[in-house]
Every structure is written in structure tokens, then in C-alpha cells.
Length: 234
Image (cartoon, rainbow, N blue to C red; front, side, top):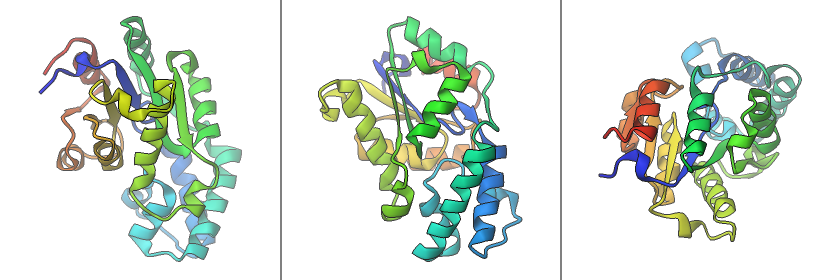
């Protein structure tokens, strides 16, 4: 098994990996579900919406109809865009880690299920834009028009790798790229692209979830992540 610092390209998830984004997302999810007639008070269930595509999680938890999902996601997006987008903080130490990786000659990308305009605004607000060669999110409306599947994250990872390769050939980066994220969607999306993955348990998924999905390594803190990515700890 290779040390994590031996790769050239690092793909980072956003929510729960770079951004501590719970307050804004949870408030908007609760509002969106309310509009679709689902009144959720369970904090754990509300937090489970951070990371996965919204439609996937709505279908999984409540078996919502397509019509309900459109209602909920549309309401979510309105509140989130108006009030919740910037209700987040970068995890302590993550910015230093990103720039130190860049100094080491590593090439960094963001691969997030969040609509790409939101991803760009958040990364820009944190002041991290120039740390990344590629910033990749979903298309506006993807979570309404695409079927609810775990494949959406895999598609975003594939798209990010295609952009990183410069010629759209994502496969050319195989063996040189690792995905870093906090939920099983990140780990399974990496697997679908034949990539190794590194889980972060300081985010919104559990260590158990990340290990069961097949993460090569799991970092409990940003400091642990630093040791794995910069110091080659195995």
C-alpha cells in the first residue's frame, strides 16, 4: 500500500472536508423538507444531508416522490442562496495544508456535489481559490434532473480528473490521484473511478462508514491529514 504523499493529484470534497458547513445547510434542508410536507426534527437525519446529493438522500430517508423532491430542493436552494451559503467556516489548519501541498508541487482540485457556482463562491470567500487548479461541482439543477444514484459523485470526480488532465482524458491520471472526503459517497465515487481514497472523520461521516466503504486511510483531524499527505505516514 502506497504512502499518501506519493501521489501527484489530490481531489478534495468541500463540505465536511474543507468547509464546516452544517449550520447553513441544515437550516435550508429543514426549510426545504417543510415545504414538501416533511417536518424533520432529528438533528442526525438533518446532518446526513451534508455531502450527498440532496435528491439521493431525500429518496433514501423518506421515499419522496420526484414532485416532492423538486419542491424541497427548490425551496432549499432559495433559502441557502439567500442566507445559508456563507454560514460556514474553513476547518482550522486546512488552508495552510492546501498551500503547503501546492508548494510541494502537488496539483489540487475540488470535487463537490454542491452546484459549482456555490463551490466557487465558498472557496473564494475562504481565500483558497489560487490553491486549486480545478474547481468542480455539479450543474445547477443536476439534483433535480438526474436519477437518484450514488453515481453523481463519481461523475463529478471523473469530470474533475478530465479537467486536470488538460485533454479530458481522466484515465490518464489513474495511479497518480487520490480522493479525500468525509462520506461514503466520496469513497465509493473514487472507487468507481479506480482511485484510492482517504477519509476524514472530522467531517460529517463516521470513521466506520468511511472504513466500510473502503477508504485506504482515515484521518481523525486536519493534523492527521497533514501527516498523511505531507509526511508520508503510512
